[in-house]
Image 1 (tube, one colour):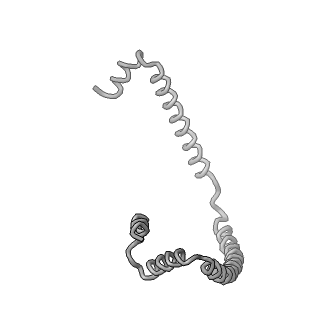
Image 2 (image 1 turned 90 degrees about the horizontal axis):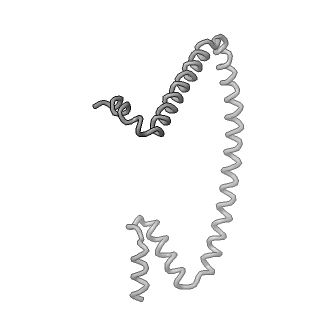
Image 3 (image 1 turned 60 degrees about the vertical axis):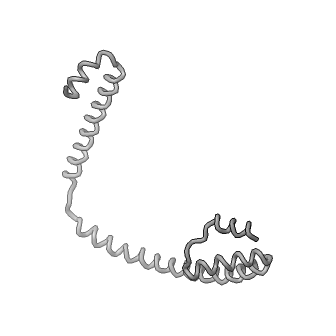
Length: 131
């Protein structure tokens, strides 16, 4: 039995199904008509002068690149300045830690910098229990 045969056979039992199917088919036809109209409009648009637009676009791109380069420099300078501020803040924060906190921070920093296997929370909790 094909889909169409089953649909015809069951359509009288399921009026909502028929309504949905008709609505879907209608929407599909509308979409097809709109796409066809868009293709026809695009085909009818003049293509003369496209080279002139490309040349102007290329020149306009240079201006954007200069502005972008200047912005990148500003961002880099700002990043370098804030990095120095963050380094001093990190040192100050580290000095305020108690002995246990410093030990944990040192272990994490060493593990990350030496590319050891990942530190698991369960492992830290087990070590705390052993202490």
